[in-house]
Image 1 (tube, rainbow, N blue to C red):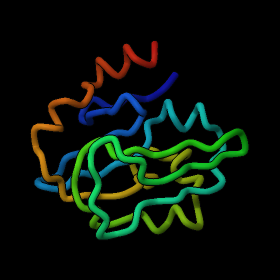
Image 2 (image 1 turned 90 degrees about the vertical axis):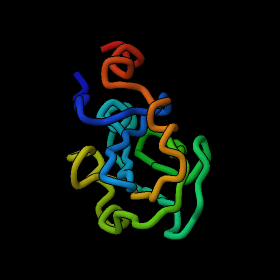
Image 3 (image 1 turned 30 degrees about the horizontal axis):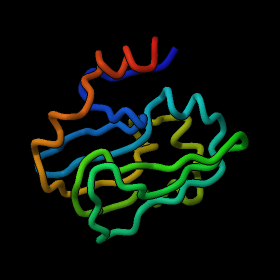
Image 4 (image 1 turned 135 degrees about the horizontal axis):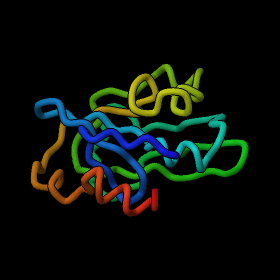
Length: 127
């Protein structure tokens, strides 16, 4: 059974968003990492890149498959989790903590309200 923290927002493409002031921390959900299984490589967006909600901004590769990462909200990438370059398994072990992907300074606060609530995301993944 997947863990779905109640203090986050979610994208239908399985990214989570944690808001801290005008910054959003983004990663993939526990459900996504379970579906992907053992992550072997994670390509993250470059710092300084301006993203629009829905943009493909990276790739996660596992022993099973490769999947794109999408920007759940618009903004400028201000930091990436460098630890994932050498330890991609952090996203499996701690998807909502040490396994976060990147941080953005978001442009359009209204986009946050368009994301899924924990309850809506739970319904989506049929838990």
